[in-house]
Each structure stands twice: as structure tokens, then as C-alpha cells.
Image 1 (cartoon, rainbow, N blue to C red):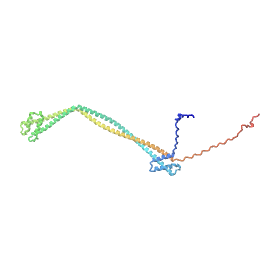
Image 2 (cartoon, rainbow, N blue to C red; image 1 turned 90 degrees about the vertical axis):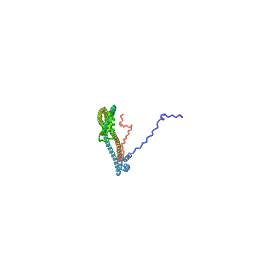
Image 3 (cartoon, helix red, strand yellow; image 1 turned 120 degrees about the horizontal axis):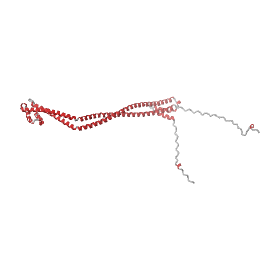
Image 4 (tube, rainbow, N blue to C red; image 1 turned 60 degrees about the vertical axis):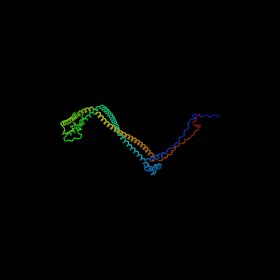
Amino acid sequence: MGAKRAASPRAAQAPKAKAKKTAQPKADPVEVAIGRVSTALVECELPKDTDSLLIQLLPMAAAQFKSQRHKYTAQTMQWIQAALQARHKKLVDEKAQLANKVATASESKATAAAKKDKCEERAKSTGEAASESSAKAKETQAALKAARKDAVVVVNEEKLQLAKIGAEQRIIEDIAITGEHLKALCQPDGTPGPRADTAVLAFLRKEGARFEKTCFVAVPAALKAKPAERTDFQKDVIRFVEKYLVARKKECEAEIVELNKKLAEIRSRMSPVVAAEANHDAAVKADEQAQSAAKDAAAALAEATAASKQLDKELASAADDIEAKTTAITHATEDIAAFEMLRDREPEPEPAPPAAEPSTPAAASSPIPDTAVSASTMPAA
């Protein structure tokens, strides 16, 4: 026996034949419509158990043709139609309400946008003003610092003058007290306070070289002596002390006048510092007001921005709701169309019988032999 021929590679690689697809049976349009209307009845929000009752009655009513329905079955179809139409109307009304809501929100959005724009302008202007005021406050603070640095010497001179004036004023007060003690010591029937003579001597001792040293030696004895028992010399010593106190007071008052003049001159040299302090105080106050205004403007802008975003969310939500309602209305319209198909269904008319074909008459046959020739037609010899 001969060897078998090897199979060709193409034949070996040939794909297997695909299995044929099984034809799916075509869905019954009546059953499809019944299912669709039943689902729609569930969404009609009918009273309790009404939707389940109509769903149960629907297949029986739809199984009958329109012209063959009993009046109760026809009434069932009317109830179903009313429920579907009410659902459709409700969806249309809800969509109209949403459209009104969108229109109102759009107007509010325009108002909010205008308010936001104004708030942005105000926030920008107040922010710029706050920045300028802060820079101004820093500038005046630096100027004040420089002025105070230059015025250190002036401030020290002012303190020194004030101390001198205070010292002179205290001397005048001591002179007044010493004069009262001396007056009490000179009254014939006076009752000088305890140690009055010591107080007078203490003041004169404090005066030092200003008071006549030779006279100071005689003062203690003159003060201790009673007014009626004083000698003429002691009386002269007392009068000398009195005149000294008066002269010393005038001298202090004149010194205070001169010190005040010099103080005014010193303070005039402080005018740059005073002006710098006034400028800085005004700049700080203006900066506080500007910062407060900027803060208020920023808060108003934040509020306006939040309100605008909220309106955007409401508009987006309303747009989604309108789209959902539009889809629901489309489905409700299709549900009504499916129901109307069930409601108006009639039996299909029976096909007419085919028309008879016309008969054709048979043709008459009169065969003539090929060889037969009439004698009369024969030619003569």
C-alpha cells in the first residue's frame, strides 16, 4: 500500500465553522405593552391597593378587543387611561414649576453676580487703601523713631529744666513755711508751734552761703528770746531774716520765669518730634479704619461668593431635575401610546379569497396534408 498524503498546512490551520446563532423568538407586542403599562401604574401614586387591582385587571381587559369588551372591562380601561394621563399631567406641571424655579434662580443669580462684582470692586479698593495705609503707618513710625533719636539731647535738656523749676518751686514753698514760723515767733501773744525756731534755722542753714554768716550766728538767740524781751539788735536780726525771705522768694520767682523761657525754647526744638508723633498717630488711626473697612469688604465678598455658589448649585440641581422630568415625561408619553395600542386593538380583518384566473378557449385544429394538392391548383400540361 502506498503512504498516505500529508495534510496541507492551510487545511490544518483552517478555522472551525462557527455555530449558527439560534433565532430568538420575537416578543409579543401586546405582552410588552402590558408590562410597560403595569410598570407605569406602579409609578402613578394611586390610592392603596388600587394600582395592584388595575394591574391585575389590565391583562384581562387588554386580551379583549375594543369592540368585544364588556362595559365593566371598558370602564377598567378608562380608569387606567385616567391614571396614566394624571401621571403625565403631574410630570408636566412639575416640570413647569421647575422651569419657574430656574427663571427665579436665574434672576437671583444675575442680582447676586452684580452684588458680587460690587463687592469685588470694594474689596479691591479697600485692600489697596489698607496696603497704602499700612505703608504710611510704617513710614511715619520710622520718621518718628528718627526724630526721637535726634531729640535725645533736647529731651534731656527739657528734663533738666523741669527739675530746676521744680527745685525753685520747692524753695518758694519752704520760704512760705519758714515765714509762717517766723511770724508766729514774732507775735507777742502768739503760740508758735514746737520747734518753730529750729525749722527757721534749718531753712537758713540750707541756704548756706546765700544767708549772711555773721548774722546767722545771732539768729538762734533772737528766735529763742520772747518778743517783748528781745533787744534792738535781736529785733534787727529778725527783720533782716524777714527781708531775706521776701527777697529770696522774688529771686526764685524771677528764676522760674527765666527757666520757663528757656524751657519754651527747648520745647520749640521738639516740634519735629511733636509733628512726627501727630503724623504717626493720624496714620495709625487711618490704618485701623482702612484695615477695618478692608475686613468688612472681604467678609461681604465671601458672603456674596457663597451666595453665588449656592445659586449655581441650585440652578445645576434644577437643570438636572428638569432633565429627569423631561425623560420621565417622554416615558409617560410612550406609556400612554402603549396603552392606546392596547385600548384600540381590534382583530385583524380576514384576508379576501384569491380572484379566479380567466379561462382561454382552445384553438380549432384543421390539419392539411402536406402532399395533398387540389387538382384545380395544378398547372396545365
